[in-house]
Image (tube, rainbow, N blue to C red):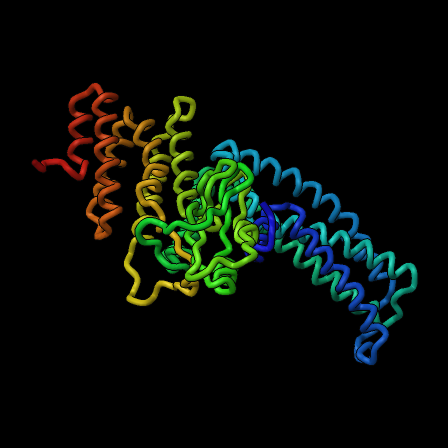
Length: 422
């Protein structure tokens, strides 16, 4: 579903996942540099610049044009190989995180932009677009481009060598999850207010497609509700899977219903598409991390160390997320839009159910899971503590069925939060 409800930031994040976006921006910048040189050539500033031979400029531009096309082709092949390795070591849900690799996109964009700049500058030079004053500007820009290409290439080679490794994939998932968790911590209801009690009877806003809620533009919802003296209760948070004709929101009015009720404007504030995205979905990061751990625990991989690393990452993220804010720190600028809080139980289901199932027969993973849940069970947050105890009991029950050695089972029991309690 598309509409005015899509925020600029959401669109920028989607563009960042496209490999053509940065090369296009950098290529336009290279065109601007050539035309800027022509402008300097026709202005009084050109008299202050030193003279430089045209053949020198042509030689440098020819070297750039010949080498950049080869390097750009090599970069594309290396990026595809690294992306494939990262997707194979992680899960399909991690692929978009890898595509956001800023270093690879910076390198690819720089090489293509340098090639386009050198070709356009050389053609402009041959067609007499520049006079003597413009030669120095083009030469200086070409030297700057050449130096930037060398620095970016060296930095990129060091980065691309680690891009396909599993460790950096986990780190990327952690960073993306931390960003959305911090946003949720400061705006626990996306800037709206907490939904309390059952939603009053009103007009239902239904979806007309199948997919996940990717983004909710609460600011536009607030504007619509203010204009119509209404209140809106969000029924489907980002990350929720919707079927056709399922309720996304409910609208009710303080007094009379407007004569022309345009609920479609409310619907356009929701972005529903095939896949989940990180932007407003705190649970997705834990699902991705859990999938990485489950793949590591498969018989084909048999890597319990990765599963333990994932558990450590999850514990760190959850501990940071549930730290209490100072009174009044939560931002709630949209008082006409009500949203439920993130379901901690659902988040724990996505994070720990798969690891508890697939790691039940591996004692070191089962122990690490119980230790993680023990820390969370001691949390000051009641929802977190209850969810941790529930998953600890489930994981322990699975371990009792999967582990045959009594010493292994006792180690798992000893690590559980309920060990020794009546």
